[in-house]
Image 1: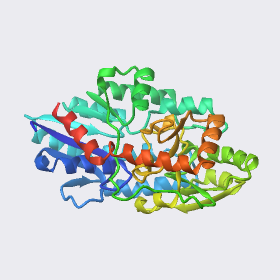
Image 2: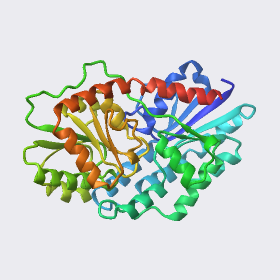
Image 3: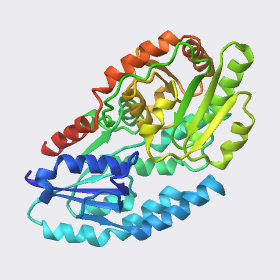
Image 4: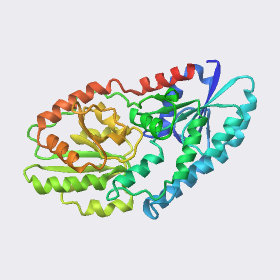
Length: 387
């Protein structure tokens, strides 16, 4: 590798289900060239020793998240965290700039601020911008389309302008899904040639397909992830309430795995069917065998990680197109437009009332998952570096 690569990620390097885990998988793939790759992360959760960290920022981020989860849901926790992180790492960036002043320097950049992007651009770094989440104009659109279920009191058109400027400064924009790539092309005016779609991955599961028993009396729906307005749980509950009312012969329950934001507790506690809340579980491998269908009703996403994990366990999936899913409609699950209650109702009924279809689609999920591993993801990013 004739260039140096610098990962800048305000996340925990090596921690599963985070941006830092993706950085770790790329780094792991490039170990043969480890002298040419540097990582600056919020915290190091791996065994790698040459990771530059900003532990004080991590401690403050815990406080910010506590505020947004339990007290003020509109508190800009992530924006403040990124701001502090960017300020903290300036000395490291300057050091690397002058240490490798005669070498081509590439920064693989995740969440960032516009002033920081301008700063590294002026220092002569080429920028690979990793767009993990469909940008905020998508949130504004969804809040306008679905005010009953989703409100956005944070995103502004000024923020959209800043995002567009950051994308324009990047050499390439890496998107995790076709949906996100098409969105920034159509709504942010980013040239198609700058957009690279590289889906995420999951660790391969060496096990038999998850098969629902024919004598199972209750179909178990599962959701894995944060439980807030953006994730569409209140919309899902509304539709499942209707199913419970109209189809008393169908027996089901919803299992929620993840941190629950206080704004969602009212809807969970007042559901007309059985909901089990399990909180945040560190080891996802223990979760997916416990239910029969993954539901992911998100309004905004980049490409939902839990979908990759679910299909590796052989689960069928019902999700929104906004989740940036790798699933194939009517092949290993169903895809609906976020907020389309009629379609969500229809597809939930199709699976909940047909155990053989759950088995059939689960088998196809297992086959599909072979195309989406972390090794494939890391290899594609590596090829982009070489170009």
